[in-house]
Image (tube, rainbow, N blue to C red; front, side, top):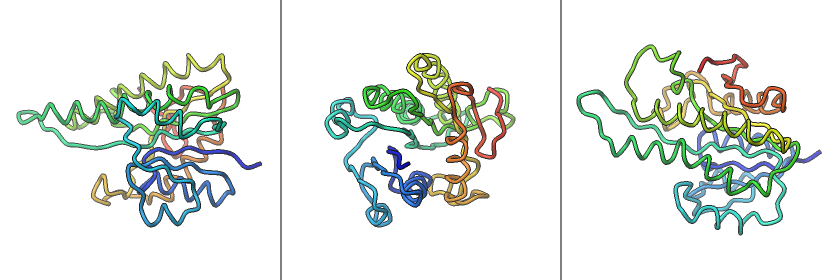
Amino acid sequence: MSKTIVVTGANRGIGLAFVQLYRARGDQVIALCRKTSPELSASGAKVIENIDVTSPDLPAQLSKALAGVSIDVLINNAGILREERLGSINYQTILEQFNVNAVAPLRVTEALLSNLGKGSKVALITSRMGSIADNSSGGYYGYRMSKAALNMAGTSLAKDLKSKGIAVALLHPGYVQTEMVGFGGDISADVAAQRLAARIDGLSIENSGSFWHSNGEILPW
């Protein structure tokens, strides 16, 4: 049965790969982005542009654009990576990453609560760099801190949405060949999307709130 999938940050990288994957499955996909790309426009998805996930106007914008739409899977994929090193930390980029990586997914999810129902799923694309136990190399203060904050937000969402029958997954894609990392990853965006979709397929109320690597490994907090 066809499902309705909503993806943020859908114009490139993993977001675009998600769109193409779910469209190939025959699902209806609503792609949210600031500006479309030729690949996204050709995907067959319904593209909604001028979506800034950090905007205070976002809830009203989404409520209007998706009024009456029942969402089966919401994928909060939009994110940014900046690098800070001790001794020359740019605190503005730390705040920027918190806003995009941690606050925005919560804002999007809350704005679309009325579109979610029993059996719906929410996927938060996080990172193992947000794992405190797994931090063996330091650095990347803003990215690590913002993803750790997203992990906490996802854990609270899983608890708060359980009674509504809505499951939440915290998903690490792996080291993916995207523009964010200068295309230096070890798996393609397509492979990452396939693995992540498999984790979403396996998401249920029973395992809601889990922190997964896209390969299926449970990651430490």
